[in-house]
Amino acid sequence: MATTTISTQPIPGQKPGTSGLRKKVTIFREPSYLENFVQSIFDSLEGSQGQTLVLGGDGRFHNRVAVQTILKMAAAHGFGRVMVGRGGLFSTPAISCVIRKAGAFGGIVLSASHNPGGPDGDFGIKYNVGNGGPAPEKVTDAIYAKTGTIREYRISDAPDVDLDTIGRYAIENMTIDVIDPVADYAALMQDLFDFDAIRALFARGFTMRFDAMSAIGGPYAKTILEGLLSAPAGTVTHGEPLEDFGGHHPDPNPVNAADLIAHMSGAAAPDFGAASDGDADRNMIVGRDFCVAPSDSLAILAANATLAPGYRDGLVGIARSMPTSTAADRVAAALGIRCYETPTGWKFFGNLLDAGMATLCGEESYGTGSNHIREKDGLWAVLFWLNILAANGKTVDTLVREHWARFGRNYYSRHDYEAIDSAAAAALMEHLRAQLPSLAGRDLDGYTVALADDFEYTDPVDGSVSKQQGVRIVFADGSRIVFRLSGTGTEGATLRLYLERYEADLTKHDIPTQTALADLIAIAGRVADIAARTGRTEPTVVT
Ligand code: VG1
Ligand code: CO
Image (cartoon, rainbow, N blue to C red; front, side, top):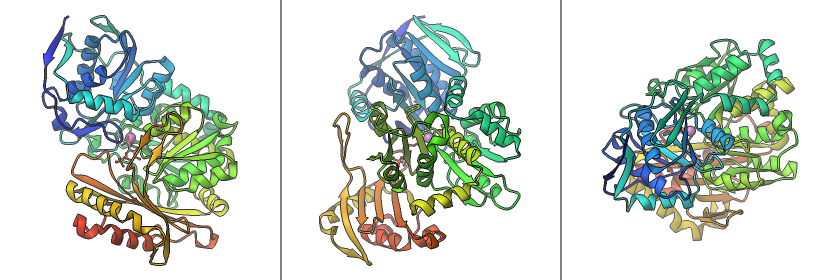
């Protein structure tokens, strides 16, 4: 075995987005594409020699090749030990869990999350720091800067490691532990939730369908739901991780999880449905003929948190991304705790969690989590819901409706315009920004603009400032329209339009969501000139 140094050239465009670097697999397979980025990660770390790294991915196409390359590069860099999940697999929340439990220096997550996989699909890589969470912007900026000046990378010529057999291996002076990717995570879930109560719920005949979307959530859900909690075999569907997710778009929303939604309809439907995404950090919660909005899910978990043993002592604070509905703010107010508003992306929650300022966090994009790790966590949210339903005996829709009756309903929807022309998308955002100074105080179709700005965030812990995080138009009645461009897509640009309207009146809680938001949809279309600028009369996906 020997380490070789290979010369290379900077490759443009290796800029991490909302959650790591995501590109088409075809791009990641180009010579030295992955190597350049990995070396740039390593070169931006201080004091990593001799330290432990955790490594794994969601099993999508190219995962195994990338894991072998990274192991050889980690050895050449001088890491002391790498903990890798068997098969090169780890869900994103499980990597976060293992980094924390092992006291590792950091971790590398191979995933493009909710983006499709396969040879023509997407691949991604993300660096997580020692708290288990995604690297903050100052780290990702440093990595990106290195990608612009890189001249060489170092790699061992050792043979591939047997990733499928648990055990200890070595490359150069580096130890490699191939470990069970589920065990530590399953143990953590048992610490947080009342497994006896959930087991008793299933024993009473409660039925559930968990759709793992042929992604990495399957092994975790099977071990925990069908194994530890004795849910009937078959509760977990699409439970085998496949390199192309069986052709699914592994994004758990009612559009992409249509199969689950169909099964959750009618009198024969299970009591409870759920799904997770490619890397198992997202969750969708479904009742019988009833989809729970992710923003509502966060608020409902917060309002009922003390029913779960891990949260029995209450919450110190809640944090949500800016576009996420303000339903959680109402719960925080009732609990007498703070609700923090951060930019989109889980990396912004890390400091709040580390500083003990927030317990629960959530995003409108089917992401919920807590201070138990530093990533969002799909199965955690599902277990939290099960714990609550086991404790209070309610159905999903009763629980949600009672929540609305108490706090009011925040009608909420997101409209995505995918794969639009990048220049047109940038021009649309500029067009919106140009209007900001003149919007405040104006009347738009009977809605008075109370605030119009481009969201800027100052981290309350380290004072770092993140600008241009989404254009928001907030009306006097609390309704909001938010526009931002996606930072995870790999084709053209994706415009996200977020719409929210608050309704306190209990007798008006049954309006179809798009009807309830129709006025705001019309205002947004006009202010942003969406149809003319994108060439689209309808969004691609409405959730
Ligand atoms: C999207 C979501 C964001 C989420 C991010 C990563 O980002 O909107 O809330 O944190 O994906 O989730 P964007 O920039 O495309 O809007 V995942 O499950 O893809 O890691
Ligand atoms: Co994900």
